[in-house]
Length: 168
Image: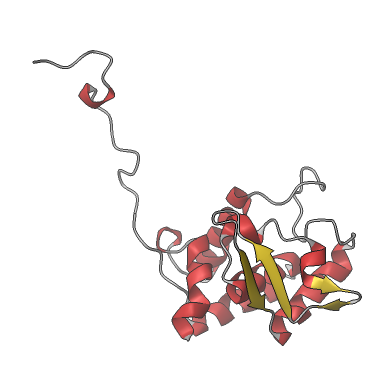
């Protein structure tokens, strides 16, 4: 029995992941975390430093991280010590601690950014009413790891999610 000309399996084409590294991405080491922080501070990238620090501290998926609103992390004029976010994938709330270093970088970013408790903490450049896209967040992570001499193929947004857990 032959294959139909309309059957995708019968066509000669490369797999979607041909030439790409698939599998789990590595977590960052303590030394690599400090290298990224040094790079972001040297380049005066306040937003990126806050995003990087919060990504590691919160252990959130990228889709949940970019949707954090100012009100999720701010109480009055201070950054909360704990925050709760409802995960997009599971629909369950997850609580995380915000350490003092992360609170400092978040405060520096939010003071510069301004906005209300309803606004996204990390807005899109295109439309400030929208959050940064997960794709843009992934591009930033690639840029950060490349800047400190790592291969972007071996690290990704999930690397930041796994980093804190790997240190415990």
